[in-house]
Image (tube, rainbow, N blue to C red; front, side, top):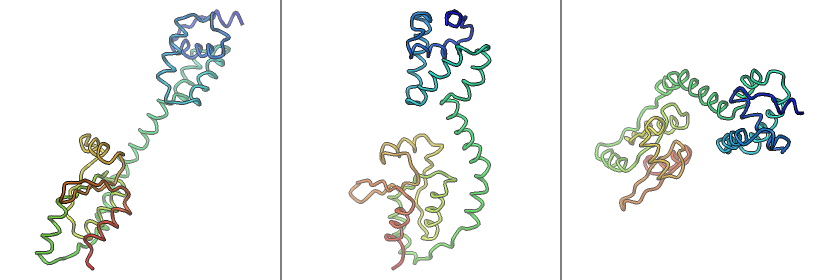
Length: 215
């Protein structure tokens, strides 16, 4: 045990992970204040990982202390077990998936575009005025948003579309007004100026049909 405790911590990752031994109290004095400080700093940044991430940190600390080449071990393991790294990988995967499939999704939307409802000019003017008090918060390639957009086309509704994916202003307005950054969401403003935020594509379509579909 003494040889393990005296092993030099030449790599910052080594110091960070081996300091997890402080959790068990075995290396409390031998590792020193600097290593304990490094560990506490890392644990604070990883608080969002919960107890699972915390336990993984402790396990790697023990393995690293006994491993013949801790630096090499940590260079491979720390990346694969890092919660932050995994989140980055998942986000990058879905971002790439959207970029690849996005054009095909939009093409299918265009090919399946329904024929719009034809109203008398006077009635269409009234519908247009009512739609001026509506706004759809959406993602361009979201299947549920496409479902709502197709219904808007079918009912000939010129509702404003607001991109909540790339436009930070729209996303913040959605989060502040509706309470959640979920799409699709229909912002409904009545004559008195009161606002309702309607989530879920099924509920939005039901509202539009009840309000604008011909009897």
